[in-house]
Length: 179
Image (tube, rainbow, N blue to C red; front, side, top):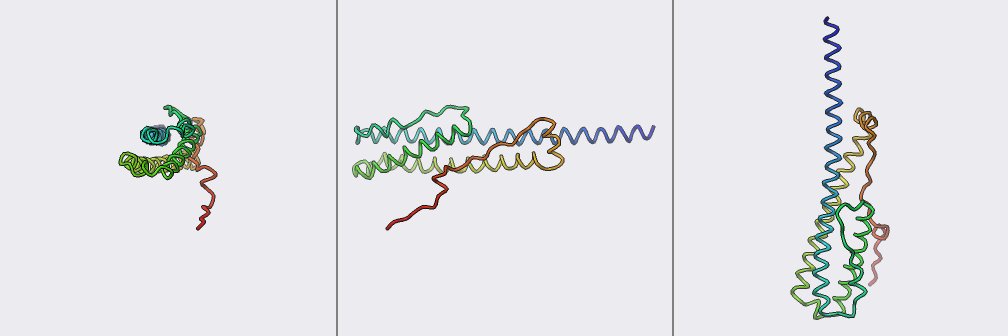
């Protein structure tokens, strides 16, 4: 009878461990989803700020339509790769706007334009923070998928690694400064 209690105890402890590890993996994956949503929120904020900046800039440079046509629409539920592509497109638009501001001194000195530039800088900071949080959560989750004993539970549940948010190739290159 004692042996039966010992076996039942071992089975109960093993079941509790499996449930605990499984719940931990679910929590980690949910944090990834939350962080991905944070990136979407930051991208949307940046999009909104760029749109407002475009409206201000349009009053000064109606013939710069090719820059305005580059703004892309953000949609909830984008894949990580789609978010990276949207991010890249918005970076090009932002660079074009800043170059245009240099060409139009009255635009560059406009109070609304300057306030929107500050807002975009703030949105960029939030986007960077959201990316770091996402990558931190992905790293934690991916590590849990690889270490014992959670890797056994992950394999049983068919869980796979998540991708880190990657910088564009051009941004990985050394900046060439010319004076």
